Length: 401
Image 1: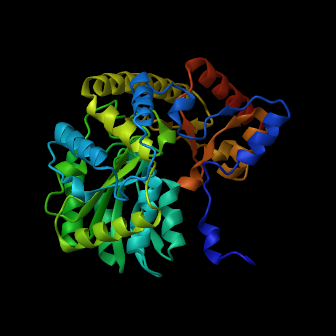
Image 2: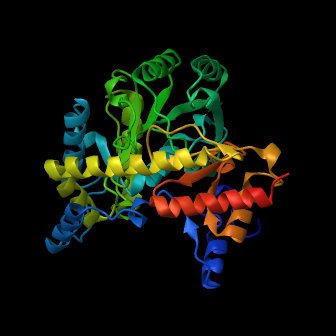
């Protein structure tokens, strides 16, 4: 690597790895259909009540450093949200406000992972989790979800992997899942909690898409994990349709030694960066506290997302070159490519050539731990999505075996 550290091999993101190529093509005058990044404001405007909340925060001159752990007004609003939605009683002093969940992930691994230690992840996974484990010298251990059974978790396989994995610091569950759109039901979550308890394993639950479940109901880990050391991750980016405000929250509900050590360590890490964006924190607090506008806006947003995601899934599943499990939540469709019908080496070559030749930008599934898949961000309007899928079909025909 030369001058820079060896750990830099873990830095980067498959979601944005083709941005230079996309920008080059755009400069050449080509119009890119960008379906690679789960960034809803690019497709659906941020609600006005959130814009007004941000304006209010600025007019009140909330432009100073906030408390490093997070503005108390926002921590109280987060606590009230969980009380209202999940009947959970969280002490605001056990909540840390972060600059998106990405910073919370970095804090967790900085606090917990020493060289050679392991973390257990369900695959497919959000890429940043693997990157941060590697940056801090750890090793991820994967438990594959079963695509043929709707991306469900094989609990027997999970338990066997947990028992045989030494030096495992935590088990991570992303529910609802990015990239698959699958949702774990209460029974599955209860079994995961039992496995974690039986093996003295710390549990982390990323619930950033909790409000984006459009088939069935959602159970929060907070409803089933009482008495177990665990961490909840959530944030404003997706629910508020405002990714750029970069507000996440990490919650450590239990008053046990593991949770308390991690809480103290994450607060110390938060001190290093001084403060998350102050006006964004107050804007989020004001918006969350405007319950009527919040509930109405989220409901409308969820219905629009549902319509677009299910439309995309139906159109994708008409193809003879790919097949997707129909999502139950989130923003994505994650089909498997029928590689036996395609004259491309792998999913990376597929997405790069597709961008070059048809100007449609997807993300390779191997970046999420699932080779020979691609991820669609299914937030574009039907006309744009239909055009994109027709271009992908043309590409597949031109590269058919």
